[in-house]
Image (cartoon, rainbow, N blue to C red; front, side, top):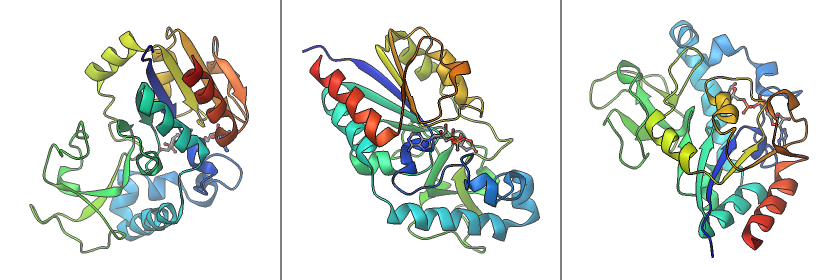
Length: 243
Ligand code: APR
């Protein structure tokens, strides 16, 4: 039985049916909050409490949500094939569905780091932190929560607009070389460098994209499945598991 190398690149649409709001759909997060106020270093300096409340609300929200059939299908696929998830999402629904190799390009909602060391690149695996100024959270971060190492105010371990994204070039290079299948799911593909994944994997033999409103401008050569992740992804997974 051939073991495929599969890369799944996901955005907020993957978790939409779990109840986690997307950003740019109507009613999305960027309709309710200004990015510069809640997701930028300038906003953090101006009003850290507003930022902590924004991420505290998202932390509590994702705790109430469960993986949906799309997350579970990806976990099933990774039992048989080599699956790497490269996600823009900060929720941990893929991990809770049973996925192990998950790259969070924009960070994770359940991690905190101190503002003195926030520029440190993400650890290659969240279990072996590259620095001990990072830690898991089990409640929203509050003003006055200080780094035990250096006394800096703790902040969400999230990549804000204007901060560097760790694209893990060396590992990405290896993934591109070996990928048999690339699946894009639930992303408007508007935020770079993450959205560059669609062209980075443009030569992967089999490419799929799942979204109810696909951005066809960036999808040349993809098998586009217009629909929701929890309906369309299990179909793709079933086909890959039957090959
Ligand atoms: N199934 C699949 N896709 C869906 C579903 C669903 N049920 N519901 C919505 N979508 C699609 C939308 O059609 C859209 O293409 O999910 C995408 C959501 O797009 P955005 O809200 O822009 O989210 P995303 O692409 O993840 O944003 C990228 O922008 O603001 C930053 O850091 C933030 O990581 C985020 C990045």
